[in-house]
Image 1 (cartoon, helix red, strand yellow):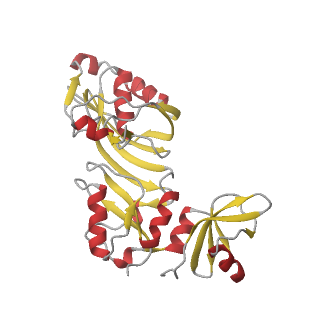
Image 2 (cartoon, rainbow, N blue to C red):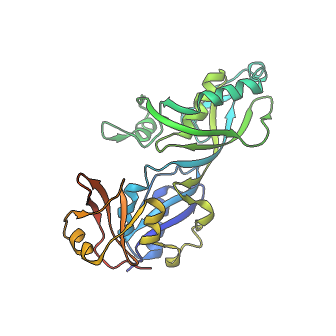
Image 3 (cartoon, rainbow, N blue to C red):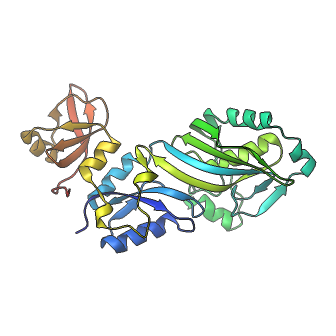
Length: 295
């Protein structure tokens, strides 16, 4: 049986998230593998996988903040808001040349903080039960509703690169879950009146997990798995149970204890449950881990 826990994978370009899951299933010899947040085939970087009972942790990872490094190209818009899409408009070279560095920085500033963002039409959001990107590929027009997201950092990396038909920006972005980096590229282009799309995207962080700790697909093996206790403590605060409380929690009982938020309950070197506080200084389990955890 495969070791339960989390796998950090540095996804290469050209692979879907499902491709990575399928490869991990084959390497680890188990069907029970899932991921915490899709990366487009064009994108590279951190994909967090849950293995065996580690899949129960994915719910608590999906909503965590993320960091991306990206390249935005101004001067053309595409129907997918990235380089894989068809070009739907290009800017007049004179108009593009007139865009100043100050205007670019102002456009970035307006997309920093709490913003209302319309997701890219080529996204995994479902419309009447169908993924938006499937509708677009079928030739249908898709209009998605704006949503509130938070971009806590949106900074240039290095110099702005200019040519006769494009302006390229290398950026780093810290953002809340659900933020579409392609939409940020699109919106900067629209604000400047020249169009824009994404040409490179790399996810470098999900919560406390970093690409520096991730394995390549070639190096992926059983030893790459982070054990449940260590993984849970990277995702959530932890609370150490007494031996009698372990039985109570595993039988669905509420126990006495003081926690302020969703917390990992541990005993010795085992992850027992994920729990939440309830009234009267009680703790209620949300997810229970019944088997002995592998280290």
